[in-house]
Length: 287
Image 1 (tube, rainbow, N blue to C red):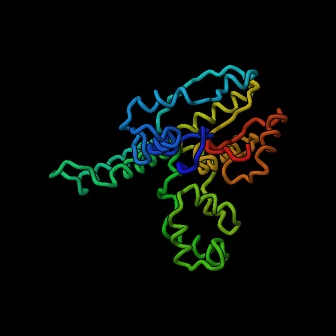
Image 2: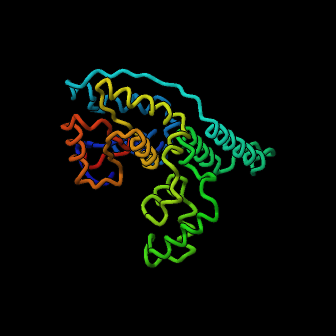
Image 3: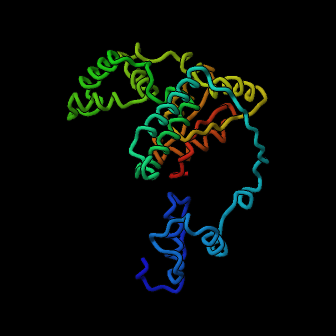
């Protein structure tokens, strides 16, 4: 793009994905500035990047666009992890420490392994999942015997396609988290006996325990709730909670067809009887 002759350049962009994105965009907008290159890492620029780009950015803020929105207020509820969550959380930390102690680091050189950052990011993601709900990870809810029965059924019924070999089906099923296995078992009558009871699902998470109190209370006060999660698997768990509470809901996530997304939003906005809207934080296309 830098080879295209032009008098001025305008970028319409969203949230940058990594630490190379902003310097790359700055290099495109200001190719004459030596400190911005396609290989520049954002951490090396300090405040220079923000100071340089701020006068060039036209940013649309919600407060300037949506003038009729109800004023927001924030409240943070701190909840204690359920015993099963606490054990899982501590086990993940101890496993990471054990790997870190025995891994190629480098007591000799003091350097971190090349994949050390990715390992920490993976562990942090697992800890976040454990803090939300243990079923977002693979625990002991599904024994090897049950896994084999699920694989047999999935292979016989071509759940993963007619071309899939049994070992491929096994690898796929065996890689699923507990909630993903639960959803799979819930979809087929022959596997329903392996689905985890709804009350068990709703009782294993401190956040769900709090929502179990909060959602009915807010509804009685006349509120309608938007419940967000980054993971669609967590929305599956929240669906189980809504069903347990006998509360109507609708859902919008990355699997929702683009053509239906605005329809779902319009339906929620126009139907005061619909109390809960489950949403993925990564939804954007079609809205």
